[in-house]
Image (cartoon, rainbow, N blue to C red; front, top):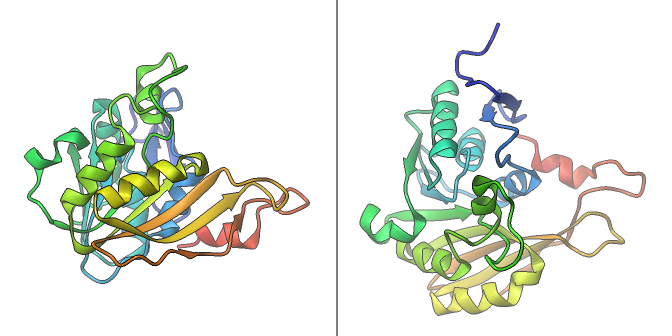
Length: 245
């Protein structure tokens, strides 16, 4: 029997977290390991208000709601179809009273929200500059390239949304580290923690997880690197812990 929440061509994915599921379209942009890693990396306190910028299908706020007791998660997404899937996933998982999805442009946060409204901001943003090759599908290009949101714009809007002392968690690629550090300080977001993610112990990192504090004092600490696969090609125990609820 077809799931009542699915549209033609869509599928239902098990998030392996307290029975939560997510609606996805295989032809569009689907979440990957980076969303799971940043959800695990993000540390929340009781009753904090959390914003996920570039929420896509809503996987990060849904996972965070499954892992934490807070009741105020918001996801902001510019693309109509992704937003609609996220909205249906929230309703399907009975999270309407805890997770709110909003369709809007991150660059227009000043029109959508009051300043200093969130304790925590999370983002799995587009990694690639707008220059160069783009995916012929517009939805995938927007998700992967900075065609609708640059790194500078993301930092600026994050600083606007965060309360003083609020925390920003982001997953990105190591080759953008210098840009990220420069732009974060320009926006009073001080880097506090960084963790590199390697495919294997003999491979260079291809992802990194970062935590910033608004108006924080300079003090950057490094977490132990995370290795995805062991020497035999199996997921490491540290990686598997990221999938645990």
